Structures are given as structure tokens and as C-alpha cells.
Amino acid sequence: MKVVLAESVAMMAIGDGVLGALFPVQHTTRWDIGPEPWRKYMRMYAKHPELTRALSLVQIVAGIVCASRLPSTPR
Image (cartoon, rainbow, N blue to C red; front, side, top):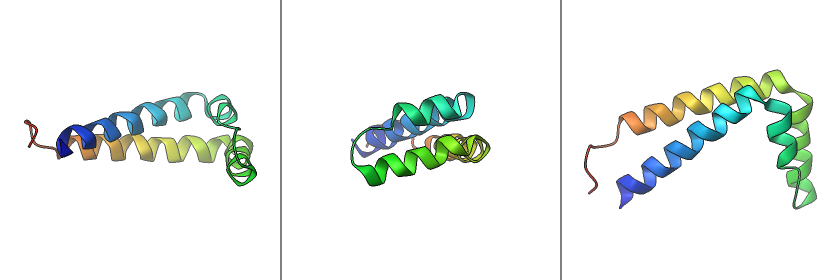
């Protein structure tokens, strides 16, 4: 179960990273909901699309590295 959960997290990280890299402003403004501290945080990324792209690329790589280190079968 731990392997499946870890792979699910890796898949979400990769997908979120792809959206952030391709559509940094749109992706972050879609999450401009909820408590004000969170909204302020998301607006900061919307104002800095190059930073959002760079962090999204790091997120993609981290997700791939995480997935590549998982065993082939669930344990």
C-alpha cells in the first residue's frame, strides 16, 4: 500500500508540475480560493510566472525521481 500511495503522490506532483510549467499564471490563479494566507501565497506565484515555471520543473523532476526509486511490486 505504501508503494501505491507513494506512486500516487509522484503522479500528482508530475501532473501539477506540468500544468505549472505550461500555464503558470492560469494554474496558480485557479487555486486562488480558500483562506487569505493561501490566496496571498498563490497570487505571489501568479505574479512571478518564471519562478512558478522553474519550481514546477523541479517538481516534475522530483516526482520522476521518486517514482523511479519505487519497487516494481507493491509491498
